[in-house]
Length: 150
Image (tube, rainbow, N blue to C red; front, side):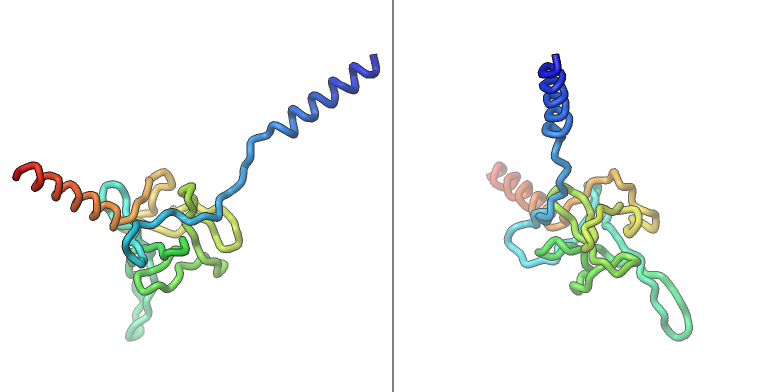
């Protein structure tokens, strides 16, 4: 009887602990478009650009400017000039191959905390893509159409 309890307890422990799904977060960056060095602009599927508001101080005045968001070849989220977009804690942001935004400290973060579209916080559920990917797809479609017309 004691052996049966031991085996049953062992079976339950192995089942509970050994079969848990893996919850690892990928550190591989989102795959950028081929054929260019980047950085690559991030947009929504309806072609709206992802933006980060930057505060500027000029001639004694303060104002906000919405700047386009890009990803460099290492998966780091940057501005067009390559300067990194930082969290309030000074961490850099990355976009991984699972579509998650991560801080350089390894924490998952939400798009809505850092980015906007048309001046409004971006929804965390909105999928993103590279503008270059869309432009290439449009060019391919146009060349297929002109090839079909000939």
